[in-house]
Image (cartoon, rainbow, N blue to C red):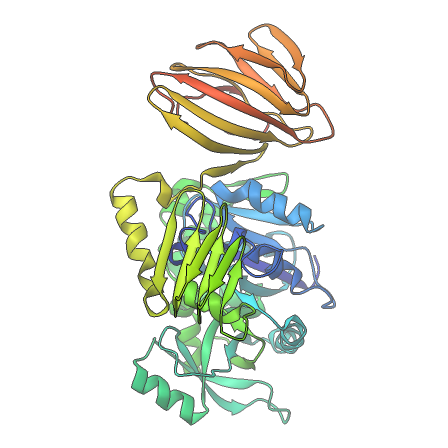
Length: 479
């Protein structure tokens, strides 16, 4: 194993960036800044560091195929360690550290959330290289973001005495919770405090040693979960029952806060100040701050027209959005929802998502366009006893061999060629041709070609939910 293992934590749901970010397709999978998704940008950010190994991504089981596809498009190899459900960042890092040791090494772990923006990648790589040296000497290192305002939405880190003569790393004195405005101003004026970035660098053994002292219950549960798991290609699965017994806690609370007191038997910690255009993009106003803006402070993406607007963020996903005379607003349009919010109220978007969930509305969790390991489908229209979808199938991919109890399906090929299994028949359906799948008949759709297959599916029946699927065979191990 290489001496440096990037560990990318990709378990967040990004509810404050609704409606672009949804629980089933959260912000780290989206290209919010630039052409790459946030996850892809996080992985690529370390390129060029000597001794760098393939990344280990810790993600939700439901996101495994999207994560794997995004790595493939990036030209990267790597593993995805799958959590059956979220237990916060401390168990996620523990699973990663145990897996690394299981592979026979003790690499330096560079632990990064998948949903942060760092605009100055070269500055970040230089800081990581310095952190690796400290980590190899046994330190648990974190990065503190050099603050430029009295921000109340971040935790703070107090830096102590300098380590060495260069003054690029410091003793970590303490972690501080999110302060009020007056306290944040005092922190900023003192010059001793940094924003907590949530990025860490340490050897796998250092984390596990610290956890043994601080949270042996988390360590024990993660050991059992990994021991009872399995590896399937590039996917590392844990035992759901054992992981379900693991307490939920963050890296900061579980360990890092306790390393600041110099307790006997615990590793020493350090903090490196970082000024590299960092943002956790925790809400729409944070995204607006890091995006390129015109001279009037406006940022936009998609088919947007602005007239007489200032300090406005406007995003269009599917249609023209025209804004007139707006100031300090966020306008986000998707094909199934529109958000309009004041800059200083964007933290409350989560309350809207909570209300949607309470009402059982799928728009809280799903986009209209849903990605699957074989491609995607887009719910174009629906009504009583019918539903219309656009379906895209990747070259060489296949849907499961399945059957429905309550619906029949009509398939019309728009482009490409489909191989259709219908009962005992197997045949090709070409562009501008169609076929009919009666209720209760086993069927499968495949793309045998080298170009994407796109088709229209018209469903009709008494029940059209996605749970009306009986799978008999599936390439992707779904049930």
